[in-house]
Length: 143
Image 1 (cartoon, rainbow, N blue to C red):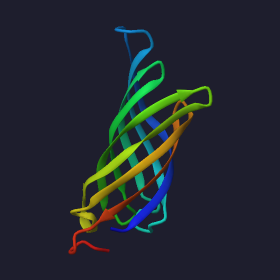
Image 2: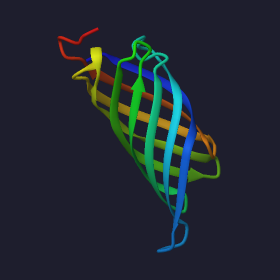
Image 3: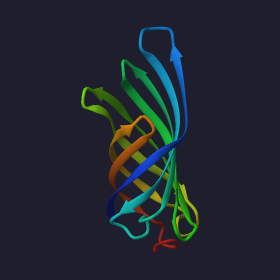
Image 4: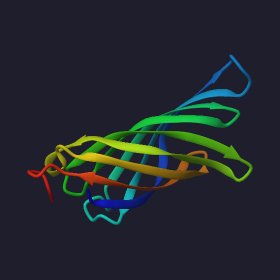
């Protein structure tokens, strides 16, 4: 399985916050984030990412679950899911978790793999993320 890594800066195109009144400082968030990938693997470099996440926070800390879609320069795409934790400190909000592929189109059909991500909010609507992992293409789809 080839190993690779990358990063992206994303901006929220949609955000919804619901304040839950069961306990103090409980909120649910639904986000759509868009950005461009930078990667050590030329197949993923400049891919456009969109991810959708739900975040469940108590006093700024909690869990994050979601789905992502990368659209590559050649028009092929890959998609998958992720889950992790959100931590709020006086230094800011950080994100950390794991991701995995659920498949792809074109040359990426049959894609499998996954890895880890780490990120931070640079503003209420912007995120910076780094990631690493490995992937496997089917023999028919290998680049």
